[in-house]
Image (cartoon, rainbow, N blue to C red; front, side, top):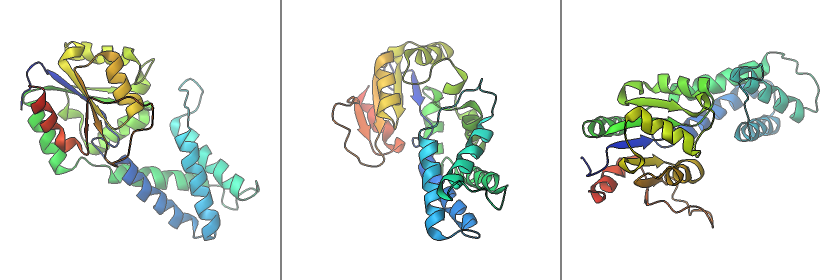
Amino acid sequence: MNSEGIKAILLDLDNTLIDTAGAGGVAIQKVTELLKTTLDHEHTIAICDRFKHKLHHETFDPAGGRTIDEVRISHWEESIQEVMGGSPSSNPTLASECYYQWKNTRLELLTITPPVLTLLKQLRTSHKLLLLTNGETQTQREKVVAVGCQGLFDAVVVGGEHAEEKPARSIFTHCFGLLAVQAHDCVMVGDSLDTDIVGGFKAGVRATVWINNGGVCPPEGSVNPDYTIPSVLDLPEVLAKLK
């Protein structure tokens, strides 16, 4: 499976190697079941929708004095208060219960499927592999531990542990240094056009591979990846073309 000139493959984690979106959806459903023990359906759905919105637009400053757990508990607190008219909850621990139900369910469901696991093992016999994931340090490291993938890679790089994340060129340069390779020796694989593909282009990798697992059309004016595949399992076909 070796590709001439391709010495290393940089792989994104969320929704590339693991189904974070799917696990998150089930986790939200578990929270709705928890909330429905004390709230009606309409309020329950509204609270969960507000949490998802806050999570999507979340910014986290590790120097801000709060842990990511505390920040996300506050997302639930705010969501409950906003939907219930700002009145204090009759259950002061409800926000914490919602958060840990969501967090623990999501982590329990995250997994690298057997076919993907086999693929990674095969790829590593002929290429250096590096996991490059954006996100807050604790959150992403917990995912790595949950799916047990540390040993599948020559290095794991978490954006939250560096001054800049994808698509910044600096974090890619750091990755190339860890693997002792040049940009043109590498392929970048990921599901995000804005971070994985743009970042790969900025860094000058040999090829970018977009995982379009939803079969969506790229937004007008967005970057054009070198290759588009529906699943990481199709990566060997791309590598064969790069020989």
